Length: 313
Image (cartoon, rainbow, N blue to C red; front, side, top):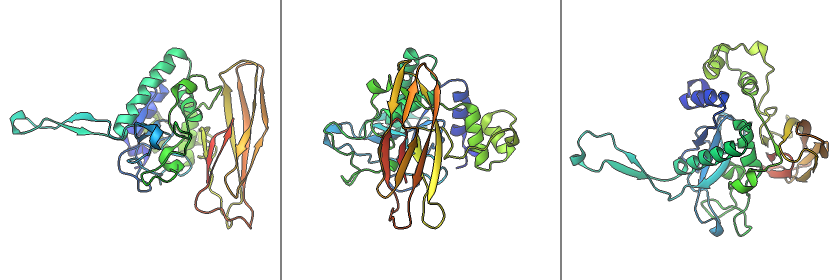
């Protein structure tokens, strides 16, 4: 569903403009590909895992991947929701006709956790934007379970990034992330314009009259999101470069050195290698992904780095 006809995406956009953090369930239609709901970059899209992460937590029932936004990795993150039961009412007038409530579990149970976490973050960091909170949650998430093993999917194989996003939330680490990626409403409008939405379409989402001619068109690769999704192939694109801007919310005087775990068959160059801060401010860095004619990359590869986003190809 396009964002300009998606009521949740529209309401969430307006909410984030007012500084309100929005957490949405990815849906229980998975694990088939492109079964995701609520994939807008201005919301935190949440998948469901099992409760006991010590037994290879598995994202069993969540939407996987997205056709609408191939440049934005979704879901963002996972939280226990499988077999966590909650009640929802039937719409019946006479209770004597049968049960008035049903039970459900899955991503609808995991998403509310993040609203609570965001409330705690707002208390600790009242000046943080919704995007900064979202960034803190993603960049500090755990990519392994409590036993240090890879997060498993429903078949007990290593779950891919389209099932887990950044991984399991770790609120105690997220409260002090060091660096965050911020996004303003204007950044998101530039992103929508890059999707070739009409001025009327963007105006519906932004809840104000908008002319894309007034905005730089920042596609998904340029959106200041705390993850990177690259589209490389031997016939069309061998190299892709990304710009990211990080805001220092840690110690005023601090240095961050990049450590890269490259996707297999892909070269990753991050410039500069060290970000030096003498105060709380923003700095830019650039990530270049490249393959060569002898590389067999395959359908998808994953990589990561400390100080820059999660990457997937």
